[in-house]
Image (cartoon, helix red, strand yellow):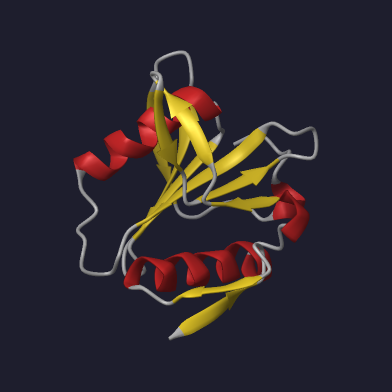
Amino acid sequence: MQIFDEVRKKFVALQPEEWVRQHCLHFILKEKKYPISLVSIEKQLLVHGQKKRYDIVVYNTDGSVHCVVECKAPNIEINQEAFDQIAQYNISLNTTYIMITNGVNHYYCTMHKPSKTYRFLESLPEYSQQHKRI
């Protein structure tokens, strides 16, 4: 079975993690109203010289990274390891927001860069609110 990914503009296999990614995309594009032109899916990045792939990145209009999203399959528990994984990605991406989801549980954080800690949020800001201070 396949599903059409409107960001990648192609059909992709509907695996459990892809189901979560597509629902998360819908949330970002339809609920939070981010323009599709600012969203990137499954691209490679280097973390400590190792090739990694992020699930979703949302950019600011200046090209900096606004948010990175890690999607897990619904049967995968969101635990410290998942937070550590996305924190490693953030070393390269230097994003403002982080989201981790397994389609059942969703966690949103903002990074406090000087202390390298994160603060949990209720949700991501809408696109129209992204430049307001948190």
